[in-house]
Length: 105
Image (cartoon, rainbow, N blue to C red; front, side, top):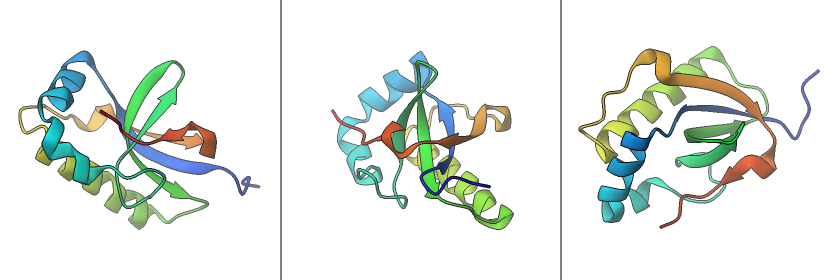
């Protein structure tokens, strides 16, 4: 049985290169992030690593997960067009709400 406080997160680890690209596009990335709003990108700390992606609460369908995956990929490409994103880089995690934070500069 799934815990009602658990969310699913679809995203990728923020590598040094991705962090540099995010930092370089400071002004352009703000519209893509909004704290605790699943329509926007979120930054999560998972196992002492930072990940960027989207969160959905509770259960969801495979179609919704697929849509989230495409949305994350599209947003990352819009924010960091020079970043090479591979399919293997995208992960799905079960997370507690306290792990979700907004992106701040």
